[in-house]
Image 1 (cartoon, rainbow, N blue to C red):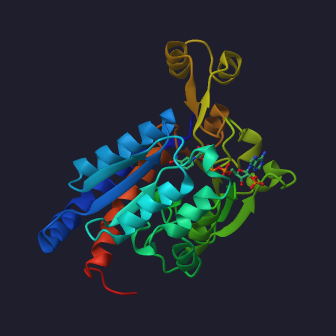
Image 2: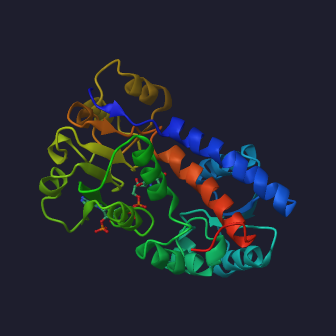
Length: 313
Ligand code: NAP
């Protein structure tokens, strides 16, 4: 392993600490802290962990964070009604509806939710209005995961102007906004997806490679230019011992984690990439903590903007 580890935990802590003054100023001016409402439908265990972490992070930072729970068999209309109540409630600045929604709500449920959250309170940055502003490089509320990656790159001194960037994945929540943000920093950006032939040939040309695929260890050394910066967005839970044994030798700390928990969270980047790349985000401890820090940043930004405390752009 020779690549530099890009520490998302430390960067996220710095981002949160820097928000302290803004939270205190808002609280003094508004007579209440910035407030985030989180809607959780169903009982998906991973979602419950993410939501607890978001609530704790917001609370620890001095914001108010409240959870609105719906049963797994709740209808989409019931979920949209909670969002509408939060839209109308002046004491909430940000609204987040945790994904995935229960399957019973239908295929377009997430899109309907994105369309319903007030753009001013859209701390996920998924509303079409905020996406449009992002395209025009004037968004205030940007999708948290790609925004966090940009913070990490900037703070680690990884410049983008004139560089080749490749994003693998084209989802609305990660791949597309990620590509736009890299473009806005003057990188030359290529997006790959499941219909792209020979992704490795394209990816291995990148100075900055972002993997947002959702397939464990998908990015092997063949996808990576020596010395490149590799951002691993993937979060994949693996419970196949043979796969884990193929990735990590006997006695490796990650293998010990697997043996203890009988499952392992692994990114989209194969461990052997660390021997080729110049810098890599670890999983866990890379992009994940940044996503939550940017949720907090977006909540504060939404609160400030709603209170007229931000200069208009
Ligand atoms: P997604 O909506 O499933 O999108 C995955 C993308 O990968 C799609 O665009 C898909 O292409 C592409 N893809 C799939 N197989 C491919 C292949 N063999 N070659 C090239 N491209 C391929 O997932 P997502 O929501 O963007 O999330 C991606 C990963 O990031 C997941 O592991 C997720 O858990 C993780 N994630 C992490 C954070 C964090 O905070 N760290 C936040 C969000 C998501 P098509 O469009 O052609 O299907």
